[in-house]
Amino acid sequence: MPDKTQRVASGVYCLMENAMNDSSRDPIITEDEVRALNFTPEDILEIEKVILSSVHVTRRKVAMVVECLLAR
Image (spheres, rainbow, N blue to C red):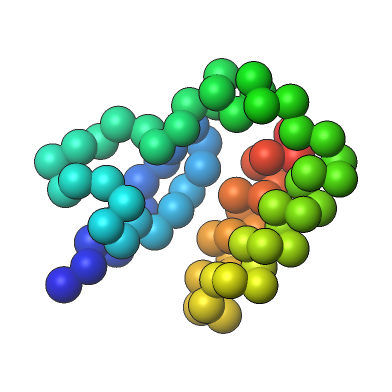
């Protein structure tokens, strides 16, 4: 059965399914790593479009939280 535990990775709440080993609690990406990417507003719109188009309807709220945090 997939692990559907909500975990916090640098302020990003996400449903984890095979993204992390069950014994690991390390973030997938840190806030500093996200900041270092220097996303432009256009990048964020593209990320939002890709995430929302590929995420199952029941997970869209999670995808929108990720997108909002990237925009910070």
